[in-house]
Length: 147
Length: 209
Image (cartoon, rainbow over all chains, first blue to last red; front, side, top):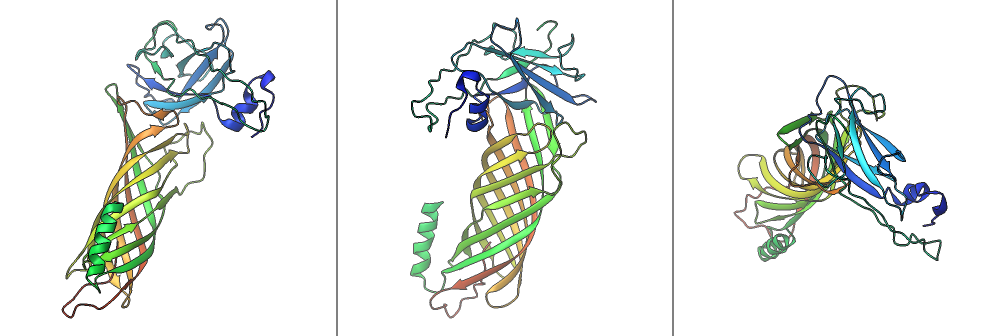
């Protein structure tokens, strides 16, 4: 297993070894039902959402209550994660759309959990080294006037 | 299950003629309903009917008892849809390599009943692609039509309750109740052979599940 381009972000590592952030988007008091298909958007930030560094759309056309997602985060940097229900599929959060944070609570309204996945590239480039994955990064979506 | 197998094996070998081996192959159709329940909400999703494939290998005992290893592969009959496609259909598949049945060959009538346990995988391939797994219990009934001394044609109906405990993100929190019900109808051939001397008054049919 060859580790490549670690200095340019983790996209190659994640492609080979699998995304290193795994969790679920859960619906709390916000039912995912409706006539229109619901897209969920997960966002990852390195500066507590002054800017969004990476995002991913999860299509919830089955209207599941709990939908798994995965992301690829850089190692050795602090990051935070949030999600929202993009009901009109315009790619951005609008007032009235359910939203939540990775905050360790079941309503998604508390302070963000700051995460950091350590990794040291192995001396032997033909090994994967100690590649870590963080599982269970669950986000609860609820009614929110603000994010 | 292994302990039960060994126990029945030893009992069967002590009674020469009651022990045998059986193998078969079942093909058919299946359908499933997936449910999630949490936070006062419930979602139920019906999967499209699909193809069922299940070989089996087992032992006959006593003379009306059988145990068998019965892995299965259930595939959707619809082609893969791209994520984001609209529509009500859900493409799902399921498989298990750890699946065992134990059952009884009902005397007089050509019927067998059985139940089993397995650890299996159940996955969506439409919209949100999710990969679930967990334990399942199953029960079924088989109608057999003898085609000779050691060959049977079997019509089988099986129900499965899949208790899903794991998804792509590891163990599912206890607050999210996730399960699937599977219904499988198959037809297949089964071959068996009993060893040793048959008891004179034995009316044991051949067969296994």
